[in-house]
Length: 162
Image (cartoon, rainbow, N blue to C red; front, side):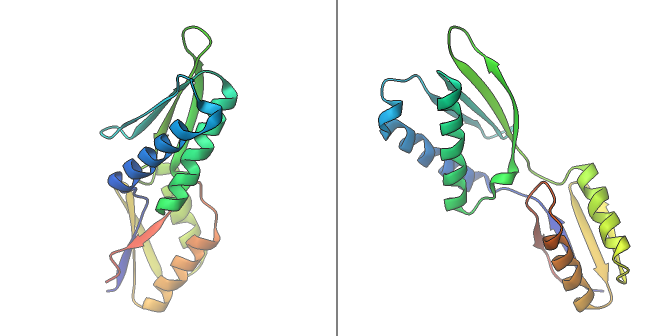
């Protein structure tokens, strides 16, 4: 029986390249000269830590990171921005988590949409991915187009088409 997997994965090396190029761009920008701005990526936990002087620079750094992610082929919807924290002095700190995998709520929403489409396929959740199986490849392709039409809060990839 034909099947494929719906996943949401980020390549760590590509993300690291995007962060490094954003770091180089920020060091070369005129409005960041002499500022104390740092960008750190924790590769193990996939957390991006930004420390800068004010909120305007923080927003500029996040915009540069998103721009570099798009240029590297990474969807910026994979960034899960948290709260910003006031650090010591007049500095601002923010931790941004990089989403890797499909969370349970989004998986339920995808499964419900597939079931409501009345296609003859089954969708089952397996850890942080969803496996869709059906008898016809045309039905599987219809599920892929359905998932692309519906806007979920994270980027989806369709892999392992068998």
